[in-house]
Length: 198
Image 1: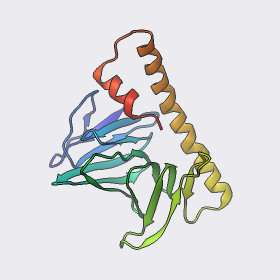
Image 2: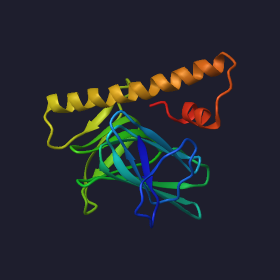
Image 3: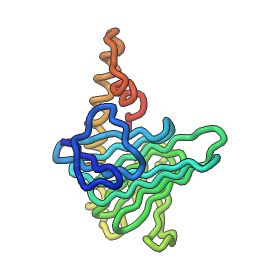
Image 4: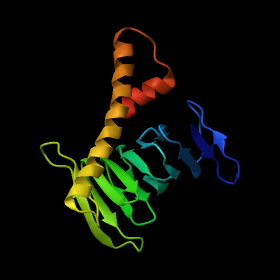
């Protein structure tokens, strides 16, 4: 239940495991579905259930620019580092923009919220003005930026985010256990197990 729409096309087609997609591809997940996109061997994103967004990436010399245009739902981002390269990694939503370098975080489009698993993320409005941010705590507690949500609503969003992350990690752990038993993993399973623990 994952569909993709490549740039310049009006047709939505089913995604397949290991599928290569060009920059600008729109990804749509249905209820109960998720999908991972690996970006240039450096970054990765995972769209949660009932989510929709486009993945854009370009490399110009030593600068890697990645923009996830999240229109609906949730996306987990893992921003890596590559020697000699600088990162400009953003998740745009209809309400604001999350920007990060070398970190792990989740972004919700509605309500607009950023949950930082590791590192720091800045939050900007749609005009590019800095409006806040969040940092993961040294004790491992995620940081949260969720303007307009009260404390109880923030905790509920955090609980929901961690529940979805736990489902991803269960799959990752099952693949690692399979590999430990000496069973061969497909290339897609190896990539998932190696890059998608959140």
